[in-house]
Structure formats: C-alpha cells, structure tokens
Image 1 (tube, rainbow, N blue to C red):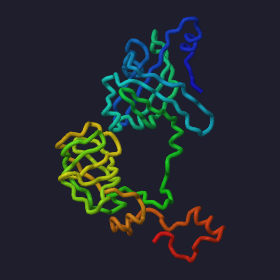
Image 2 (image 1 turned 45 degrees about the vertical axis):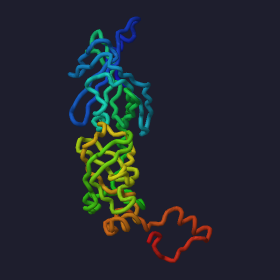
Image 3 (image 1 turned 180 degrees about the vertical axis):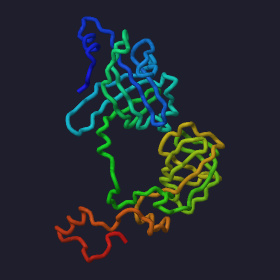
Length: 288
C-alpha cells in the first residue's frame, strides 16, 4: 500500500490541487534522468526533473502475493538526455524507475508511488514505450542450469571452448537497411555464418540470417535494422552461427566433447511413444 504523507494527503483532499507526476530513471551505469508532466523544472530527491518532456505513464496495476506488477511509461524522444542510440545499445535496460506524486506548489510534499525496473523497450519512429516491472520479477530469474537438449553456452566462451571461426571483414555497400555486401569473408560452408553474431567496429551488433555470393563479395541478410547506420568502409567481426544443437556442435564445429546440453535425455515424446508401443526402446541413445 502506498504511504502518502499527511501534508500531501491534506492537500489532495482540498477543492483545488496543484499536483503532478515525476519520474526518475536511475540507470545501471550511474546516470540519472528526471522528468515531469509539469510545465516547470522540479527538484526531487536531488534530481532536476525536466518539464514537458513528452513522458507519460499508464495506469499501474498492483496485486497481492508474488505476482509481477506491471505498468508502462511512454514518451517521445524529445529530451536531449534520452537518445535513440542509448536505447539501442541497452543503456536503459534494467534501469530503476521511481514514480512520484508531487505537489508542484510545494515540492517537499511528495510521495513515492512505486519503484519499478525497465523490462523491455520498444520503439516506433520517434517514440518509445518502456515496460516497467516490480521487484518480484527477480523471483522468476533462473538460478543454476536448466536441463535442456540444446546447449546453454555461448559460442566461443570458456564453457564452449571453441576458439576458431571468427572472421574480419569490411562493408562494401548497402543494398537496403537489412542487406549489405561485404568483403574479406571466406565461409567454409554455405551456411557457416547463418545466425552468426555480427559486431561492428563503430558499435552495435546484429545477427546474420543468411549469406550468399554477390559479385566479388558476399551478401549478408541481417535480422534487425542496424543503428548506427551501416556505411561503406565499416569494419566488423563475424562469428559463425550456432543453433545450439548437438548435431551442429558435432558436425559443424567438431566440439561435441564440450557440448553443454543433454541431447540424450528422453522427453515427453519418448514417454508417449512407450504408451502406444511404436517407440524404439532398445537402450540406445536418442541422438547419435
């Protein structure tokens, strides 16, 4: 239950009120941003909240128990302190957002309505929508490992142990916002870089969906629109693609000894096959 100070409660009970909402965003890198729907700057907890920044909040839902409370905050990228590039590179991911109810006539009369964490941010044109979640979302975090058939390591990390395959290249030209032609790559196979991670020297990453020869270079189809915009001459590093399956780990990378999944573990499909008598239960592995 939100606790409102007696002075603010008395003010809100009056016939005429001078209240507004303020939002303070505390990023994980230590940067702090303040916003308000009032028409003048307000100093809240040592943070100057910018006026009329285009920020607005949805109605928050609260529930008893351990369910995750959710809300949204929406705004235009009109503040100089929030840029498209900051959102793209994840600067606001997991940032803490404080929502305050403030008497702008006397800013010391204020109440913290809720403290949430940014879960995800979606962008459309010059606007953004940030999903806010309560602290109970931490209870949904995975502790330890999951027993799955696919590998839970990242290609090239210490648990994976695979050290080859990354290649450097240069952008030759752009065909569209999701297609580029590059030079310098020599893929050993037709699908070597499919689902591979593309890291640009100028900043930002992308995922390669597929690749094919194009003139004297190689055409890369990208999953996302790249930001900052890709330009001819940009350098990059490209890792081969890995679908986390045991078959690809063994056949494509020869790294089956370091596979971090459980491919031979029977699943529900094996139990159902046993019931109808059509399964092959000779004691052999389910995955060769």
